[in-house]
Image (cartoon, rainbow, N blue to C red; front, side, top):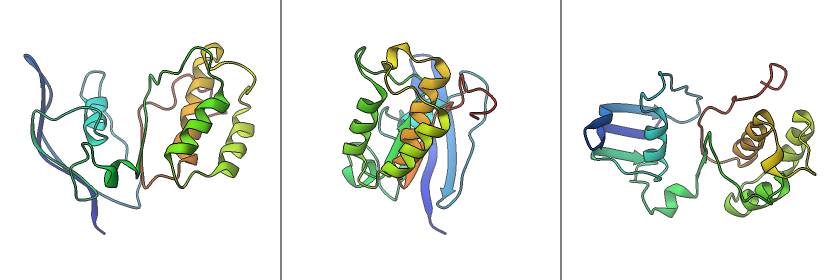
Length: 165
């Protein structure tokens, strides 16, 4: 298989702090990977760089063989569900799903509807009033229904009860 992600000697510095220090990895497609580490280890920083939401200080980053920054050939194929995704105060889950549908050309509405039912997501409540677990469910639904070639989840399980997990 061909590597979907290739990172060589990646470093990310914030003033005197090294969030990532000389990281190298290669991940092939068609698999599920988990990134484990303590709080502050740089997991979210790495995902942010791979999805062009942050910049490396040095090193090489390739996603689908290209640097992701301002690269629609890469970014149109990637979904990043952040742990702390923000939505407008008056947004409902249907707004989040409608926006996602606009961004992801392979959006699977049938899967989204199935997951909404499975998670028992209250669609008539604003996102602002959802529980932490319900908010996580919104992210999981977007990540899975996006049918993106590459999907990143940043702590998608937060607040989900055992049944939902």
